[in-house]
Length: 415
Image (tube, rainbow, N blue to C red; front, side, top):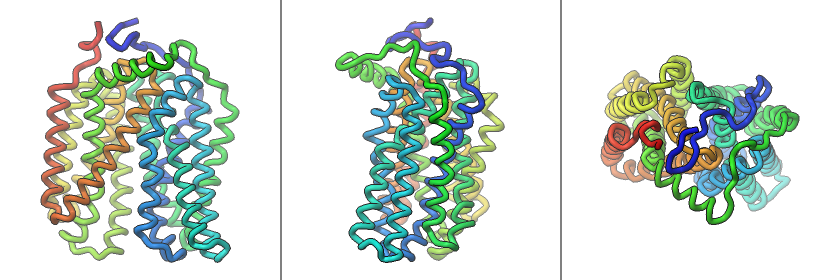
């Protein structure tokens, strides 16, 4: 077993190899996570109309659950290392089910005047709090589970499948409200609950997956190990933050670009944006199918290629003068993110032994990145997007610098 400054490098799975039932549970869980994100966002206008609540209130409610990921995802990562991935996945699926069920009850109660506005709003915010506290562990636990069940020759492919699954969910998610929204916004929300229950039951019957080869540190030793991980992996973690910040910024800029540059009204811009998000999700799935095998064994080269593509896509998107170039820039950007995410996750995972801590930390960094991207987009939007365009290019250039200069091959870091 190889050694580095963080201790032994895992070269084979810690858990027993999974079967098709386990894979279906993992892929299905992150699929529902992606579907829930897009379904809820698309349902917001209908919820506003049916309940009479302000759009600003609801747009504050939705990010609440996501922002809690910053604080709870690393904790769930440690829990999954200590008690097993299955239990954290179960908790995430349970939190997902309860959260959307409470949200549906709040909408139903308010539309039928069974609940006062104050009680309904409180129930909605409580539902999103449950989401943030429990669901934050779902994606990092599934990633760590996939890492555990793969060896160094198939790790990128396994992680790419996880990325593809959540993006397929984001792609299919808009179909749920498209079919059911005419009956009321509560029906798409309840559909998410119904689709998640079989996955929760399936996770419950899987064989318990207790860690069998990773020593669990406690107290000061655990904190010291975490500091060592951050010290050793900060270039890769900075890449992760740069990628998510830049792509989050691009996503938030598309709406203002459609309205200001292409003269769409609010409703038309929302419809076009919905289609563009589906195109972006589809492009990530295609990217996974085309490059997942190629990148294995070419991690550093893939990181550099993905960084260049992200720079090109960002430039095309923010300078587009017609919808075709805008779509092309979005497709290139989304595909490059789909390439980069499993690559930098694999680079990091090959240098640590507690995969739950790592994936939980990455989930926290992703949330910080998307939140920072939203803040930068808001700042740039107040200055007619000129400053935002500068931010895009600057962040992409920073990502390139980190990729080409700071990130090293794991083989160079071992001793």
